[in-house]
Image 1 (cartoon, rainbow, N blue to C red):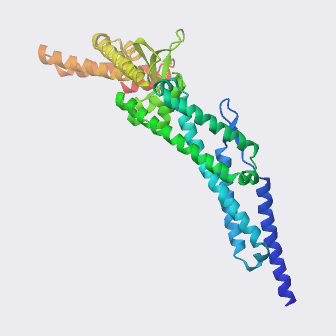
Image 2 (cartoon, one colour; image 1 turned 30 degrees about the vertical axis):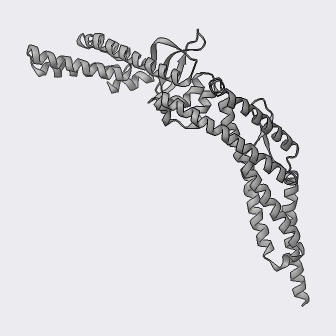
Image 3 (cartoon, rainbow, N blue to C red; image 1 turned 180 degrees about the horizontal axis):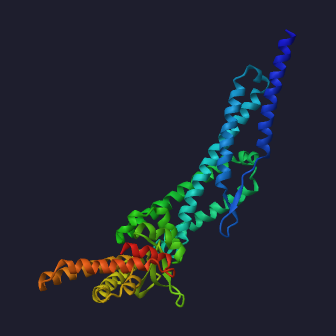
Length: 359
């Protein structure tokens, strides 16, 4: 009997130590806030908060296991109290992260001039919601320890739920707004709301437009800005580094759908001009043996198109003027030999080395 009492006391000690360790960490743990733009620490660190939520869940599992032991009776009230606190705070943090996500999503949009001007009333309403949210985060930052967060749990939950509801109204307005943009430029149906809103919130810069251009235009990876004239676009560049310049500069301002339409028109006009040039001059270059000038003078796809023009022209002349197909085969072999010889030129750029085999 004495041995059983000693063993029971030992088990109770282990239970007490585990409970105390969890409670001690609970008392010492705090939320980590991040600075956002110039607003100060108004955002929860997503990674740290997710890790904290995982710890709360794991601790609840451990406490539930301890509670199932007959040796936990002296600590039953303390264990149940900790479990209740952990559940409440974990639920609160889940709501909090949801509010933070939609706040960033909506906030990014209303910081853009285009959205703010076209949704002026909703922008004013968001300003008020934004001030409420920032004030709430500033208060939470001063009470960032979990124990203090728990003591304000009900108040925080109510204010966060209310803020979330207001932000959802703004989000619905933005969804309707984005639909009008997509109707005006249908290619934007291939872009997520997040990327589109981020692009709308920035001034037109090469980096800020990159994520919008990639899904809209095949192999276009960035814009070329005029270094001598602010706010003007003069071309686009591909992933391989090929640059296509517009026939005329495009003013990088106004509604995004209008700007994208101008970019699309600029690319089309540039390609039409290049195709016309290769049809008029490229064929002559290939006929006269100026293969190097041809290979380096056009974009890859335009060069391929020029080769097809040249082949078609040879076939037309053979069929209409008479002649042997061996002439065409000999001409093709001659051009192919010169192109292969170009590959041994050590002065070729990496772009040219990729372009010549395509021809």
